[in-house]
Amino acid sequence: MSTTSGSTNPGSPAATSAAPAPWRNWAGNQTAQPSRTVAPASVEELAAAVRGAAEDGLPVKAVGSAHSFTAIAATDGVLVRPERLTAIREIDHKGGTVTVESGLPLEKLNLLLEHAGLALTNMGDIMVQTVAGATSTGTHGTGRASGSLAAQIKALEIVLADGTVTRCSPTENPELFSGARLGLGALGVVSAITFGVEPAFRLTAFEQPMSFDEVTGRFDELVAENEHFEFYWFPHTEGCSTKRNNRSEGPAAPLSPFRKWLDDEFVSNTVWEGACRVGRRFPGTIPGIAKIASKAWSERTYTDVSYKVFTSPRRVRFVEMEYAVPREAATTVLRELKALVDRSGWRISFPVEVRVAPADDLWMSTANGRDTAYIAVHLYRGTVDPGYFTEVEKIMTTHQGRPHWGKLHTRDAEYLAGVYPHFTEFTALRDKVDPERRFGNDYLRRVLGA
Image (cartoon, rainbow, N blue to C red; front, side):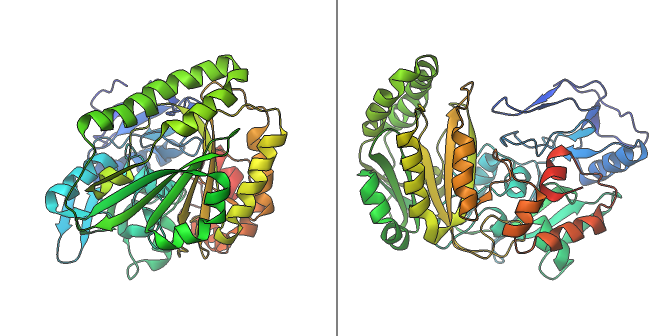
C-alpha cells in the first residue's frame, strides 16, 4: 500500500494514506475499506493518530499480518499499520525479559532472541504474525505446562482511547493488565510488549504416524509424557500424524537442507497445494488423496533450536475454525467429530489439528481456568462449506467450547458470557477505558455486546 508523509490530522507526523486501498486478510475471506491508514513510527505518533481519529469521530483498529480469519481487525475508520513500530527496547538477561514494539514479527523476534541466547518458552506453529496481533487474538502452540504467547507477557504498553500512553503489569494498573494481555483490540492499541524469556534451548522432535484409535486411546498418556504433543487426523481415513517435542541437551541434529525442503516445502506446501486444488475441483478424489496424504508424512526425528522445531512454513491458504474444549472432553469430542464426518457425504481435504494448553488466568484466554484441548478444522480456500463448520460448531458448543478469537465462529456475547468466568469483568473494563467504543467494530459488537 502506498503511503505519503504528512497526515490528514494536524500535528500527527505518522505516514498516512488518505485514500487507502481496501484491506484484505491473509485468507482472503475478510475485506474492509478504511477511511485512512496510518503507519506510526513511534508511540507518540500512534497516540496522535488515536487522538486524531477521535477528533474526526472515526473508529480505530490496528492490524498485524492479517492472519485472523475473523473480522476482528476490520474497520471503516482509521486502520493502524504497525510495520514501523518494530524497535527492540530492552533485553534484560538478568530479569529474563525482552521488550519489543508491537509491530515486530515473531520471526524477527526469534532471530533476535537466538542471537541473544534467549528463547520464548512456547510458540504456535507459524511465526509470520506481529507480536501484538498474535497475543491479542490468543495465538497458542501446544504444551503440557506452557501456555499461549499472551500468557508469557510480563508487562505491556497500550494507547487508550483518549490517546493516553499507559503501562500495565501485575503491579502497575493490574486490572488493565488482566484484560489487555489478550485484549482483542477492544481496550486500546498495544504499542509495546514485555515477554518473559529464558535461556535458549533445543527441542527434539519425534514425528510418527499413528492410527486414530491409538492416538485417542493414548491421548492422556501422550500429553502427560511429552512437553509438547500434537497430532493431525486426516478425514476419511484412520490415519494420524503425531508430533512430540521435548527439550534436549543436544547435540543439534537438524534435518538436512534437502530433507527439510522435501518434507516442509515441496510435500507440505507445493504438493499439498496441488492436491487441494484437485480436490476442490473434483471432490470425489478427496478420500483417495487423504489416504495418500495420511501416509506421506513418515516417521522422523530431529533436534534443533526451539523455534525452528515449534514452527514450520504454511503457504497453502485456507479458512479455519478452532474451538477450545475442556481437556477431559477431548477424545469424546474427537470421536463425535469423526463420526460426523464418516456419516456425512462431505469431502474434507484438510486434516483436523489437535493441541493442548494448561489452564491460565488471562480473562479472555480460551484456556482461562481449565486445562484445554484445541481442535481445529479447516477448508481449502475457495471451497464451498457444505455445512462442515456449522455441524462441528454444534459439537464444540455442546461441550462448553470457546472459539479462538481469530478463527471463524458464530458465537455472540450471550453465549460467550456463559463460558468465560471473567467476561463481565472484561466488558466492565472496556466500559471504563473505551466508553465511546473508539476501538469497536462489528465483530466486537457481536462477541462483546454493544
